[in-house]
Image (cartoon, rainbow, N blue to C red):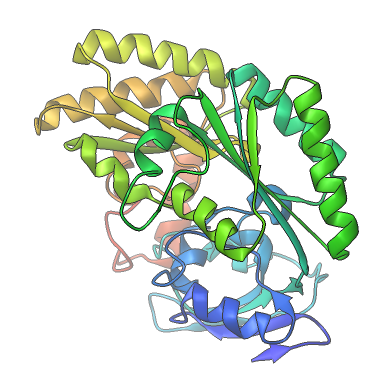
Length: 366
């Protein structure tokens, strides 16, 4: 159910993200969370994992899109906090207990989502630059020059672009695969002509300032979709199999030194290093896929320890947007203090004393 005047949508947890997008767009509105699995990902799952996606830099993660929700507790109690207003400062905001809790505190059944106006002027470009330092400078430059209209800044290292831009369904790569770094930049605004001129002028100034080495502008929706098809071609990393995949976040200023330390340590551990890097640079979220060369669980654990332990001292997170589940449970202490984990367990015991809701996820209940 869409309320056009208040720009909200009431939706059941099983609705797919794509169905929500289509229902909103039919009313000239948008639910800004977006990710490659939009056709199969459900709203309940997006909320339970506090999903991030491609437009976090402008609109925030799933938490920012949820005004209210309904959940069923372990004892069968239905907690209905179906708030539909932006401001409701009345005691504890109970929805936040369930957002990002991975189903361990309650089963989400419905939600009230915040919608935004659909921006008709959408501009996309795929650009290349020759250093991580320039890539970070480019982020600041574009964000400032577009005055808050930037909606995506998706970075791809050469290691990812080189394999992701190829495939029978992708056609000719829009840029050569010889550059060190690539970025998919997108803006959204209200005035089609003015927004396009500003976007093009901004890219021109970035080129003049030496922040870009090459660029191609999408001339239509088909070309825009071709850019996103490269960014979303995550399946291409299976060429590294067997592999370990990471979803980390860290301060942007620490990114270069972190990756250099990881690369050196991984080479020492693995001998030959084959890995790819890409991610939502604007919010400090990187995805790493590292070829292991072996199915040995001990080797995978050693790689995980290396990647995660390097985050501890710089305020990083072992999971930027995908949650903990079972796979990262052993490493939770790299991102959360003993006091935080103890409080999480207290909440778990209070709401699920029998440990029947997604048992074993995030941490072992005690």
